[in-house]
Length: 116
Image (cartoon, rainbow, N blue to C red; front, side, top):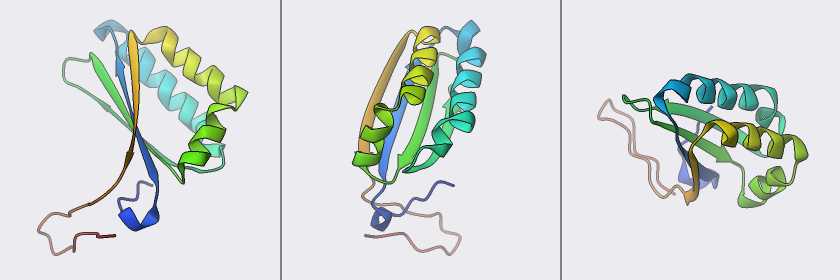
């Protein structure tokens, strides 16, 4: 489950995939299958969320890892590398960017904002 709490210290990686609209379903299925079958079992993996734009040309994976080190270790796992390559064969382009959460503000439904 995604935790939006800066105090957790999770590393967020937002992967943006550019894809031909007719290949969007295949890419999304590949990413979800890779996460369900491989990534979720990798030590340090926290969560992944998948989004697709209305034009079906962009898929975003918002993923969290316990730390930068955990993500780096995952990147050297042959099973993970294979899954990344599978997605890369479908996508036209892939842009991963790492982030650190600084602030999360909840809606006005009575929940407090989460601060570090």
